[in-house]
Image (cartoon, rainbow over all chains, first blue to last red; front, side, top):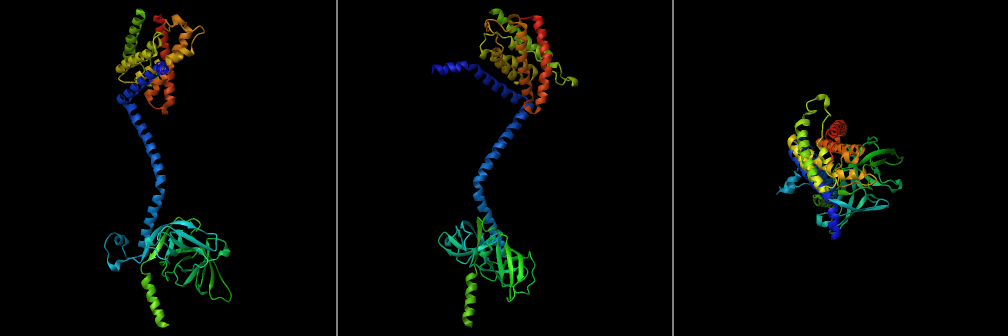
Length: 280
Length: 173
């Protein structure tokens, strides 16, 4: 204690100095316009920088939420795009007319697991039957088709990725209506190279044409991008062209996807079933 | 003892009034002497007795600074520089300490400690004072060249007046 007092006495000059300087600077800033302006300005710059730093910090923590929010927003926009004439926002917000029900609803899902190196690749998503996901729903991102849901549990769903030997997606060349189908050939050893088969030989096409979903199946709406034609060749003895398609989507790097729910699927499939049974 | 106090009281009022009433007008309104200011009141702080405790020196520095500020209408500006000068005084003492140490009963004057010592001592304090003063006046180091120029020019002129003061009065206390 005595040492402390001694120390304080030794430093008393310094403390008095500090105190008086504080008094002086307070007076300077208070009573001198130039210095006051500079002071206020610097304080603003200082606190501005501080606010910016803290905002950046908070921004980093909100990135995940923000991503999700943007994905939701995109899903809404996709709904608007693929349900022409139906105000989907109104459908969600208020009571709706039966005739205004949209056909396609898009549900955001996060990719939990995604393999790309096997012959049969699967994607695990964080939405399940609780969120209204049913098997045979299409999965897309804004860059194209990702896969098809195979099985759902309460909270998760497993989908065959586009990089699955048995995945066949009904596709066509944009602007034409020849039905073809997209498959993935593991032999190519490239996650972005797909092949488009069943396009008849007489179809006119050029390298660079866009390949989109046909809408002939009940899985995907029409016009979702798959990729662009990289090459096409005529194989002797076959009735169809051999077309290689380069996918726009990098399957190895997907985080958020949209699950396409076709609300009219049951009706459509039942009708088809009935006709086929009649003809049998 | 009494005469020391009296001498310092005279210097306090004399230098503050001289500063505020006479030297304030030097340099102002003269385009060609933009960097010229004459600051002489730190002589009071420079000549305070050596045995005066640091807090007292600081308080007296603050007092004369505020006095000059009232005359200059720049409240706090001269006071902050004066307090800074008063605080640096003890460090300059340590820096310039002669081999035999100081006789603490004396005042740090040319008569007591020799003209060369006094010149070094007063020059150091004067420059510190002026640099601090012009820094506070600009209130930003953006104009550091301006600050240094002002300090240098005013330092030369102020030292001139300090030497004149020394020659006229040659104070012992």
